[in-house]
Length: 85
Image (tube, rainbow, N blue to C red; front, side, top):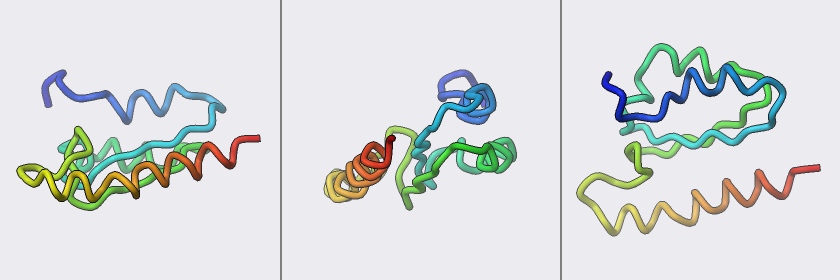
């Protein structure tokens, strides 16, 4: 993998105790990396997996699908922020 993607697995292992929401799509090349499986075990990280979305959290070639995904994305963020102490 070249350097064009966010280094999600590496970044998550450096968070320490920072409560974090990680959002990723199943069409993101990072999603299939073995390092991501390990990163999903990092304590304090809540995951929201978006079926069919790419690295930009869009449905490739489907603007209507991209727009339709927005309520779930916003909802995940709102729920995460509402739970902050």
